[in-house]
Amino acid sequence: MNRWQKIAWFNLTITAICFIICLLLAIAMRWRVAIPPTPLSLVIIPWLVLVAISKVIFRKKSKRVDFDERDRQIHNNAHYVGLWAFVLSITAALTIEAMICFIAAGPGATLGHPLILLLTICAGGGAWIAAESVAILIHYSWGDKNA
Image (cartoon, rainbow, N blue to C red; front, side, top):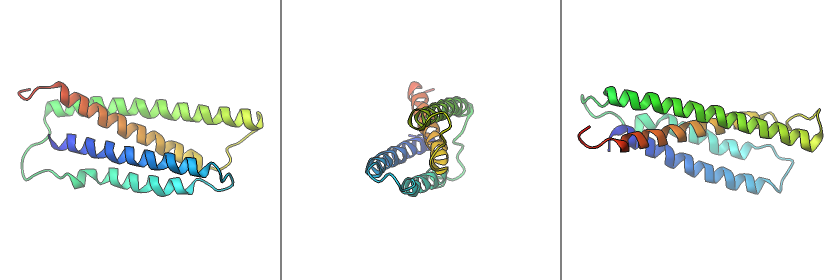
């Protein structure tokens, strides 16, 4: 397993753990309607920090080359997959939020707390990281050991 596969597995694991914690917090917050979603922010911020330092945690070993043309092509394809996942998840989330506001309070409704939009963008970032990591793992698994 090379460095990039380790980073992808680390990112997927951290993303899955934070998704489960956020889901549990959202369920717990359902019964307290008046509080803003700051507990979710307390989970999302460490998740972003861990994903950001994953390349530092899995450093390149000595002077070896760990990125060739095949790796560059795999990462370019993974970036495109991640970008599409980000765009689709943000579009779906904003559409759903607008529909909920329209149904709940009528055509003149607004979002109750502006932090919800920030959390939506962070969730889109989570979709980007998860899709990119899955694409990296799938592309690396398609090649054989001699490729």
